[in-house]
Image 1: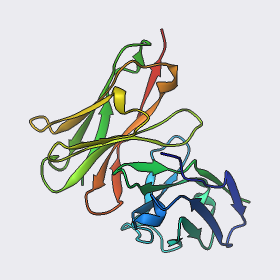
Image 2 (image 1 turned 120 degrees about the horizontal axis):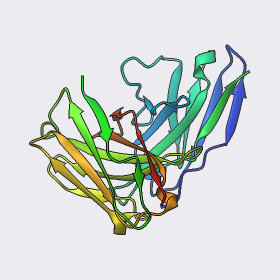
Image 3 (image 1 turned 90 degrees about the horizontal axis):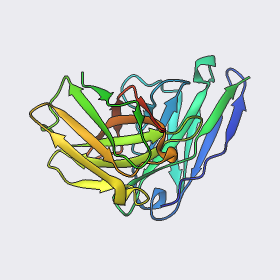
Length: 110
Length: 120
């Protein structure tokens, strides 16, 4: 299985919005509404931020939103804050009943 | 709330078997419908899904690791385990355990992670 494709880095200023893309195939992102996003601060375990494409777990800010179009999923963070600076990973269920992660995107808040 | 904690040797010799345990507290691993998963992360690199075991014992593994991976449940001790055989330096990573919901893509909570180094 091939890793999902994410940009290596994105950046934005406080208060702005950014979007991180996650490109897969019809065998993963395009085939199921089982896409998740995780936020990871340095030295910490990943934290579930979005699941099932667009659902937010309890306690996650509504500044985080997810969407999907075809084989591409996206994570949008609005009203950027300093604490949003972290690595972000997408993951998707595959047709082989496995999971695949993206390579990760480093978000820098300028 | 449910919490997960990884444990096991921090150093494993090449060609040997890496064995880790994830102890679950605040809930039973045999109740509900969940997968219990392992994910790893080499230093400075991204996340890699290793595999999962269902509450009823069925498993799914990353195809790239399938020939070397085994997972099991220990319901009496409320924990689950990972065995990865014939390890090399490429298996050096932080290993995380996590709970995956059966009917969604929710993977939560995660353990704090444990570093395993493969070296002689």
